[in-house]
Length: 404
Ligand SMILES: Nc1ncnc2c1ncn2[C@@H]1O[C@H](COP(=O)(O)OP(=O)(O)OP(=O)(O)O)[C@@H](O)[C@H]1O
Ligand SMILES: [Mg+2]
Image (tube, rainbow, N blue to C red; front, side):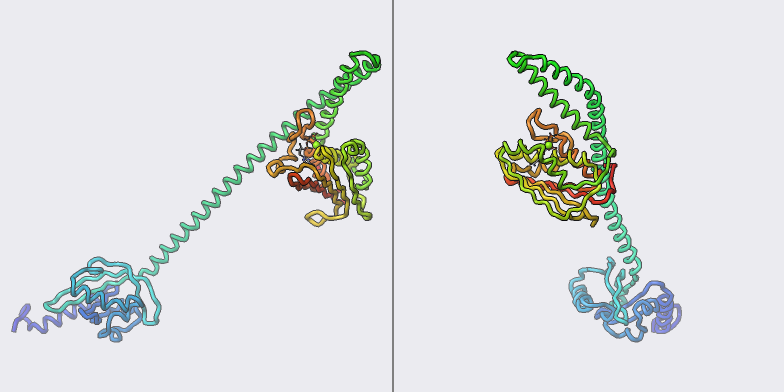
């Protein structure tokens, strides 16, 4: 009988087996040993804890009870394939697979397999590591990465917004500066203009009707009038928060203003339809400012209907978007209309499509400011070739808004 270290061979074998068992028992990693058919030979205590089986429940069974579908179904095939071809898919390589515990729960694991040959006996030793926590950490990392990316995108969007807003602010500041400059120039022009106007008038008086120079003086008078109009507009535009509020019957003031353009409208074949509701409350407003608004809108409507048309004026009780009671005034013309690209600009100061000398582009800007100063809203809808409707809503109370 062969001996090892002088001991009988069988005793030596069982001795080394005991040592091997002791090593396996203390190994922190889970170890599963199978034979060439996939039958479990050994399940160390760490593997028992990991899979929730006692060793004797698994030893002698096919290792696939430790795997969920589809791995469990495929395992026999893998093993047979390796034994036939020697092609290594996992042995000596190790990879991430999925394990199944006795209670049916499934968990990710790192599996390293090595092959042990003892004579004819082939065994496969699998060292298994539960990587649930690592997977969770990876997922958490991916999640925080995703969150970071979302936050970054949001930040970028905000950056864009800030850029647009600062541009708008800059525009507004520029406009305010232009407005102030225009106002101070208008103010300076007011006195010399008055002087010129007076002189021209006395010149006219002194010029005989048949004097050939009379026509020239008349032209000067007309032009001076136009300049005075422009200056008055500019001053009106830069006027801020100096309202004189009183009780205003909107319908009545609208008709009074209409009288100013009545002849002009008639000569242009413009028909005016009045739709004034009977029960419109009186509002607290600056009468002069409102009349200016009405005149600007009537003039615009008249200019938009060079071939004649219909202007419908509506006054009715209504409310603002926030629910405050208001008086709603509409100017609906059947004129040329405004193209969509112009519609967003018409209320900007100095925007005009009228030929030089005809319009300053301040009419609607004045309207908007005046309406806002009254805490109201102004809205324009238009269709080219069909007409334009300007809708104003003014609150009945006197909550004014001089910041606009
Ligand atoms: N009812 C309307 N129909 C068609 N276009 C209009 C109407 N009202 C205003 N617009 C357009 O809006 C532009 C700006 O109007 P706004 O009253 O501010 O200036 P303007 O009439 O050109 O000049 P101003 O009123 O200072 O004499 C006009 O030039 C015109 O193109
Ligand atoms: Mg105008």
